[in-house]
Amino acid sequence: MPLFHVGCVLALLGSVVLVPDWLAAPPVLAPGIGALASGTGALAAPAAVATQGARLQGGGASAADRFWPQWRGPHATGASKTATPPLEWSDTKNIKWKVEIPGRGSASPVVWGDRLFLLTAIPSGATLDASHAPRGNAPSPHRFQVMAIDRATGRTVWERTAREEAPHETAHPDFGTWASSSALTNGEIVVASFESRGLYAYDMAGTLLWQTDLGDKAMRNQFGEGSTPVLHGNRLIVVWDHTGGSFITALDARTGREVWRQKRDEIDTWATPLILQAGGRAQVVVPGMKQIQSYDVETGAVVWHSAGLTMNPIPSPLADDTLVYLMSGFRGNSLKAIRFGSAKGDITGTPAVAWTLDRDTPYVPSPLLADGILYFLKANTGILSAYDAATGKPHFQLQRLPSSAEVFSSPVGAAGRVYITSREGATIVLKHGPAFEVLAQNRLSDGFDASPALVGREMFLRGHRFLYAIAER
Image 1 (cartoon, one colour):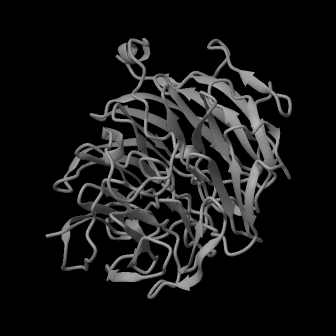
Image 2 (tube, one colour; image 1 turned 45 degrees about the vertical axis):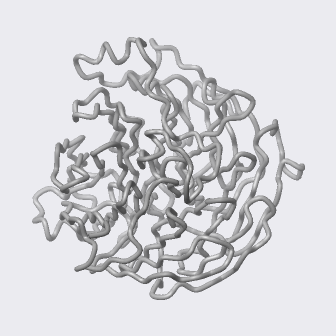
């Protein structure tokens, strides 16, 4: 039922293939992108490097800090240190605007400047009302669409159909969507991954820069796809885990050309990889059932690895200055806090593993890290725990959220608050801190699987039918 929040024949197991330009399957380059690909200036370093858990109040902020450029926010922690979203709302209170989004998708909104970017899959020939229905067991032709929306008004600025065709296999009949990966941006390009339906890069005005196709995934039990790539400088990292030959690859974000590829001995995963800085070099950490692995971003070499998590790793990892936190919760429970700064080789059972937990971890929702507190839900329920991130000691455990029976959306935090949205349309607002304290209960007449984006005074929520801008009115 995973929703997400998502081997090269030349590679021997454990080896890295550096792919020369003449051998790599070339992406399709749109006309006129030579200036972008010429190297006259590297793409702006994105906010995807999670070197510290975001603070929920105060502090200076860069341009990227003020926006929500990727799945899980500016620091990939689920938190914003600049946003001040409202405490309360309803269908008739503090709704700045809402617009109906055609089709269905659990892709979360991302925001840069005055634009919001959203992915959706629209069944061909369906009415607007009918287009929202779950269609995981009916892979009919769909339009795979990228939308740019004005933050102030909800008006569609541009929309592009990346591809129109039928998916090659089914997804979960009730929960699966054909647009489960989220877009990402660094203010210069917008990357849209529809996974088996292709990977696309646009400029901020909607001009297609390049597109490439990594093939068709074969997902176990045909549960559906949904891993989101991650950007670091000129590198776009894509994890391609499935039952038909898994790998991780780095593409040149300016051209889409493959730089390296590393085979992975894993089946399906949906977690978005995490970029870290250690010893002056960037690493990308990837969860797995068999192994957790960290790869050098520039070369693809494995820097360190440890024993893996449970089957179906879906929650995305996050990090502070010292530790990276990885967890999963299907057919068991596993949380590992790893000291990544000096980790090398096999760290299983070594002091590099700072602490572990084998209970109450999430299945679909990703955790939230803010001011040294690690929040996470039990399975897909509205049952919340909060731990001291450094020590693994609980602040509180298994607190039931009111009005939240089932949760796929991931918690977010800002302005001294924690926001958790249920599938049934309730958002519970908690006071951020070591004590469990409910501040507000809000409800909208919609269902929610995607996670919120927090920017400025606004919260952006993507429902099954509508996209909402929530702000104090």
